Amino acid sequence: MDRHPRAPDGAPRRLAMAAGAALALLVLLLPGAAAAAQFAPIDDETLTAIGTVLFVFLVLSIIFEAALTPLFNWRIFVRHFEGRGVKTPIVVVLAFVFFWSFGLDIVSAVLAALTTDMSPEPTFGGQVLTALLIAGGSDGIFRILTRLNIRDPAERVRKAREEREPASLRLELERARARGPVTVLLDGTIRGEIAADGVGFSLDDIAPGTHTLTLEGRDQNGGALRQAETLEVGPGARFTRTMTI
Image (cartoon, rainbow, N blue to C red; front, top):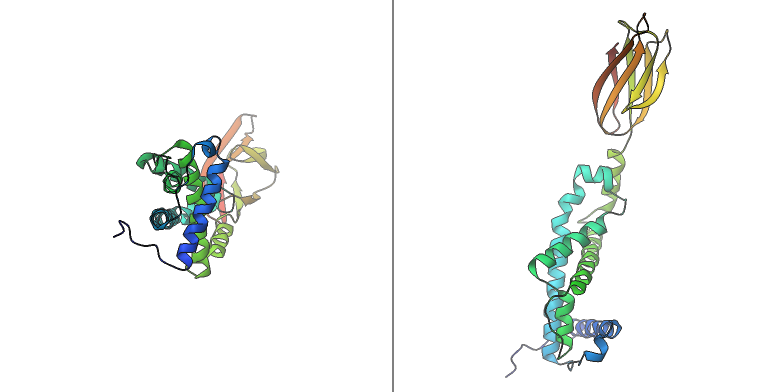
């Protein structure tokens, strides 16, 4: 009686054999590995071991895709990072930290199943490659869920566009002591000047977030005047602010 259940026939069996062949080629490409590796016969026991590892890979890919979805849908993340190529590095780093913390190495496990003299003990290189595989697997799961209309990347793009829509401000100036022109600064950068007889100023293309609006001018004796306020600006906001200087 076999110690392990027989691998299923059909597509899953062929997939396991193809994965085994691909990883065997990887062993040949690793420096010094080909000389030491003694390949095990592709029998039911080997296919079962490989199938188990591939199942773990599938489950972990699903877990990472589901676990990181709240982060990638977070309003702050969407505003600052959506579409800017940071998702893959985040997944790779988190996956590596996870595998390193728990001593997991899918690559070493598969290579150990394919050979008779390689240890399944985790290695740094194997864990790095495993993190890259999980990043690719997580992306594959996301694409599958997109085709099933469970995930909608277009919605993320729309949200990112809305979150990044610049705001506009109409500044109304009330002169108390200021005489002459008044300089308008946003976050320390000069955005323009209100003329000596002016009472208003418009600022466009203000990014959503927290900003400091500052007015600088001089009184009738030439003394410096300065007034600053903090603005909380929402995406696409259109608002008016009155300041006295």
